[in-house]
Length: 171
Image (tube, rainbow, N blue to C red; front, top):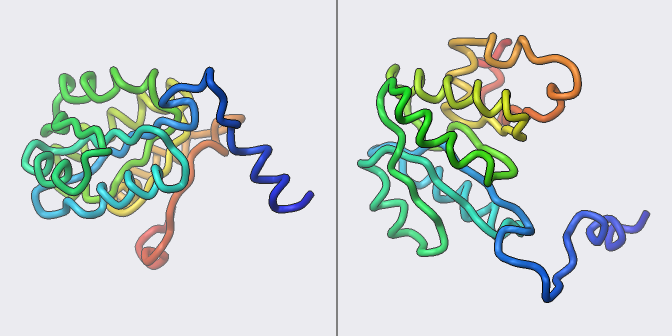
C-alpha cells in the first residue's frame, strides 16, 4: 500500500456533512502552575496532526496561561487535589472524547496524582485510548498496577511514551 493510500484510509474525507469534531477529539490531563507549556504543546500538536478539538484539563493556576497560548484550545481548570468531584468533572467529558493523554505538565503533587489515578481508571472502564507521558509515567512507576492489570483487547489501547525515562520506568 502506498503512503498516500495509507493516509487516505486513515484521514476522514471532508464532506458537507462533516462537523467540528469528526476528525478527532482529544483530552489532555496535565498542566500545573510550573508547567504550562507541555499540555499546550500536546494539545496543539494533536490539532496540527488533524484533530478538530483539543481539551486541556488542568489546575486552575495554569488555565489562564495555557489559554493565552492559543484561542483554539478548550481549557478546563478542573484538576484539583484528591477530589472525586474533580475526577467526576473531568470524566464527564470522556464520552465526547476519542482519546486521552495523561501527564504533560502534571507535576508530582500527591493529591493531584490521586485524582489522575481515578481518571485513568474511568478512562479504562470507558475503553478510551490512553497515552501516558511525562509525569504520567512517574505516576505509573509509583503505581504499576494502573497498567499491569490490563489484559485482553484493551491492553493495546494504552501507550506509554518512554522518551528520556528508560532508567526510571521499570514496570
